[in-house]
Length: 55
Image 1 (cartoon, rainbow, N blue to C red):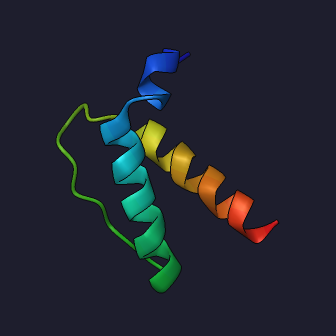
Image 2 (cartoon, helix red, strand yellow):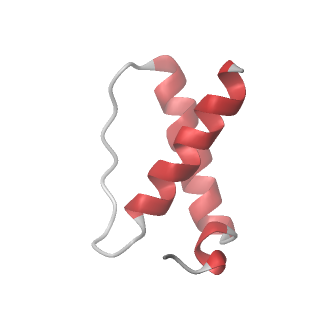
């Protein structure tokens, strides 16, 4: 279980939104983030943005 603070971090939200914008223009994308940055949280936020945009 991840702490709620991970999802509400402005930096993480910004990175997730930037990744989402990149995914809209490309079918495949790679993000280079530091170890321990929270890639799982970012992936979940990007997936939520994609789902909300397509429904």
